[in-house]
Image: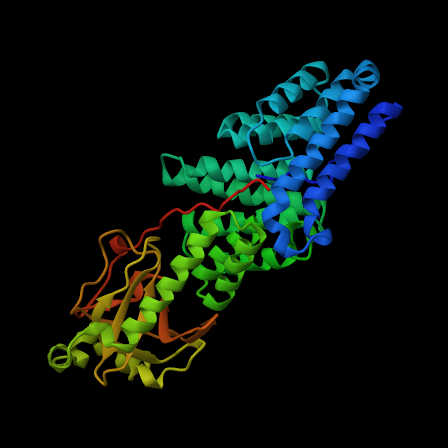
Length: 444
């Protein structure tokens, strides 16, 4: 989760000298973690956890030295600071949880202790317990740390919701409290990043509407202004996921690469980067080779490709003022108003995510494009040989360079399967559905 940073919500000033010294040491520990790349090069990323552990051990030594004086002055505060120190690493630390629980028994009004204990529970996968902690903190004071943490737990609960209505309700609650967190501190990048993740969750749980992706990317742009946020691998990973579904493949590759650089040990980020490279390679090859369909077979598939397969668009051509055109006459980067394209499915492009449903289509002139379909219900995809008509296609010409490789292909994005006409028949509402995907909340 890593929502706990070097800046916490305001609490009464510490007057005891020993406690003040410990508080300063804990703040320095978190500053070291959160601003690591302000004083270290990216080449030292692999050493970050080891160096942080050394810094934590130094801080714990100070707690041992000052225990008698600080513990006597304000035991609850001492236990909170000790628990916060032990919780600085991404690993589960049961001693941190014990210290924080004891602190809250002594003083239930310690807002930051509730937030810290909530993060301990989150690390252990105890979402409900974490949620209770953040709600307890908010009952004492509305603060951005509790709000943004609550947003994450709402989204996690949404992934286990038994009904569509409950899932959407929790996702929308996640957006609502994330927006409130941003309102508490407009310059807090962590809150902006969590709001962005909440919008991405809307894309998969409410509707695969590209406007949700645009909202997420706008929030990521604000988040990236914060040096704490932009130095975390998790931020760039989630941003890359969003860029991938926005089909901005160049920026997605760059964001995954940054995530890998910031945390060279994170296997999931490296795997996602490799998967996207393979995915683009497949599309490039299959579009270039027209789905690897042989020349004679392709001619046979295209022979009977006629306006009769336009279905409702055939009869309404004049009323709709539409023109059947070859793929080469589409204008890149926009919705092609007044145009409809028609082609045969020559192949599917298989990938693990399930979204979008991707196939290659070849028109009468033997031009081929990749077609990505969103909001498609499981089992409702087109098959090889189907005739597909797409009215007013949203067309892009993709040119992506990554290291020594180049990928180039035409692409049509279809945001609803109900836009498609397959074998002369318009697809119905039963073909439309959503799919869920989680963002990654990786303690840093």
